[in-house]
Image 1 (spheres, helix red, strand yellow):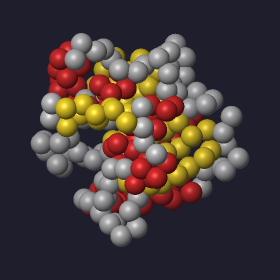
Image 2 (spheres, one colour):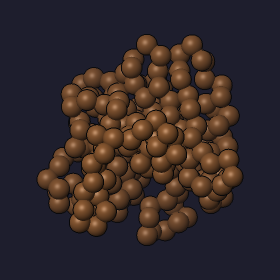
Image 3 (cartoon, rainbow, N blue to C red):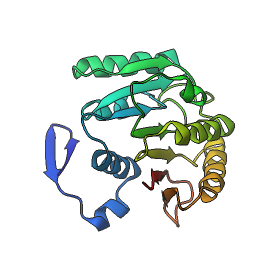
Amino acid sequence: MEKFTSRNTTISYTLSPMEKTFSPHLTLAKTYWKDHIQPNDIAIDATCGNGHDTLFLSEICTVIGLDIQEKALQNTQKLLQKHQKNATLHLLSHALIDTLSFSYAPRLIVYNLGYLPHADKTLTTKTDSTIESVRKSLQILAKDGAISITCYPGHSEGEKEQSALEIFISELPSDRWKVTHHKWCDRPKAPSLIWISSII
């Protein structure tokens, strides 16, 4: 059962397989997350931004959040406090994700690439550091873990990131990982979702 809020109205319903396929990218991502993680799991939000993904995850499990911008972490903390939720936040590049300490391996790592909404658009995730981070994430994941990556090819660096990620994920061993890339064939600049899950 999914709950989606529009203004002051909350609607609960179950997404069909067809709806999951053609849902907006963030709705689809959150559907995957909710299906994958449990209350005793650890999730990492590798790009906190304004904290909406961090908040969503914190309603399900233990969350560690990262961002390289102090403003992003401040916004995230305010949002969490408003909803009386908690997460451990670090001022840290996602490329250093392997330096984090946790009691057991994370079961989900989430990336929402691009720049901080309503902020300096020149401060955006970069192709090289994103690939480095995803490579490290594959190494620190739980055995039944998954990685969610939302790409934004509508701007120059975002297009480079998505192209590089497509090459990277296509080379992952198919006996170890299941990889899907949800994107519109007729809307090349639209956001897309990459989902990488381990084969136990």
